[in-house]
Image (cartoon, rainbow, N blue to C red; front, side, top):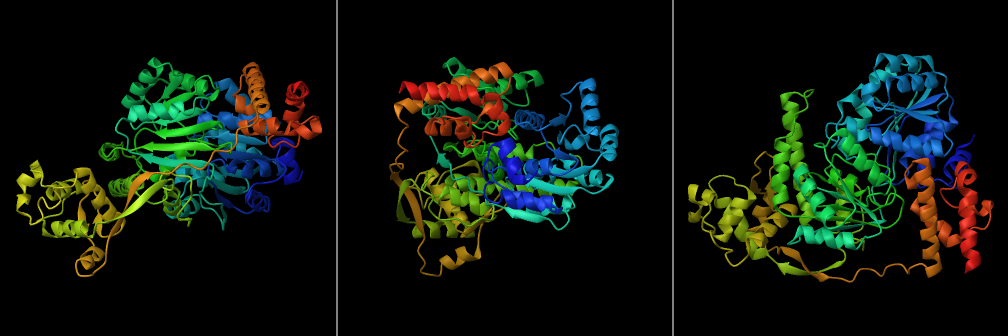
Length: 604
């Protein structure tokens, strides 16, 4: 069967998305492939379509049980024989699935990396033709990736023990240049064809907010998304528990997820969220990787994450169905202190040497610095993220809080020179907060201990708030006039560019937020009849999902139902042209949805 036919029959799409076909064709030609696509761009199709077109069985290495279950559930609903092998199965279930795999009754089998070299699994794989090994969330192989999994390092050994070497394809949504090199090297990929579609998610809006009252800000966001599912990420378990209690007491339907909960409790909360029984999930970063819930309308970070990679991956869980979604980061300077504590007190990986552990910690502190810059920058937030991953972009996206804000230019040349001279006169290097205290004229403990009040620039910015002084220092770091180390206790120093500023007539202009622009006009709402039809279609979908005990989006995604309500197909043939309606789903559900659509249309 040809890829185009597989795409339509099983997945309900008439055409591939940008560069998907390129990845599919190279896999089918027998070449290793590294595919970097943003969340929601359709990475899974790039290995699922070839798996159906190739002889034998395809193995998909996946990091999480929840991801495997979601993927297998969706594949089976689409008519593709698939299974997973993990610790959630009983011994009898596992042995039965393994036996079916040996009989080649599955086309796709998902497995955790830690299970690859177990005797039973490896023995079964050596009896059959493994045509493709797909590595999902491939950044987990890199120590510089935010989700490093030592088990991923076993993948090359597993492949070497098979009868013949299969095609190897690796997939990830977030990979810097260094992580990309690690993936190719550590997986021992052979001359891989690299497909990078870019990291942009145009349907997502990005905002950074420094609210006086974070909880009130969160409530406002939730109220603006009453009908949407949303995820609220927190940096600590304690904060998750507190928000869960407060929102539950306020009457919101929500769940919580963190490593301190029991496995059954975590599963219960996750299932309630996946099945749309709870609208809001409050969680630490323990929740989410591989969660294939398509209808998340917003993601709020109640605290600043440790790095851009984590932030973009977590924010990217919004709008997976291509619909518009909102990503908001509620920032407070104390988040930096919390994250430094978490980095410095994280459990070291026992497989790393002391030197490697130190390198990882220093790298994490460096990443935290860029995360802080993101929260305080006046640049386009989308541009900041994309350039972090090495992708050039426009300076204005029109869909982030900075692009929708009005700025004015402030001449801070005098303040910049005072800051630089202050730093140059210090007896040793200090952190940003100490330098800010000196410039403000604060008699802090460190100022007194080191007699920093004797600095010629002590109190030279007494007329500014401490927050403003720190913003100026961070701006000078971003612009390269001073530098901040990535040590455990970072200090700031003047750069060569900063020294030149003292002798040159260059002005330093800082963009200061003036007011908020009016957001672009929202799309015109659907006519009343269409909104009513969409609500009925969702109700029918939910009814079917409950009977079949699967998440609603496994039946049809919101995007598919939106298209149904807009186009109002009258026949099965017309319904089959809706994106996401494959032949299996058309046969299983087509008549029910057509009947509802035609009833609604006839009554108008």
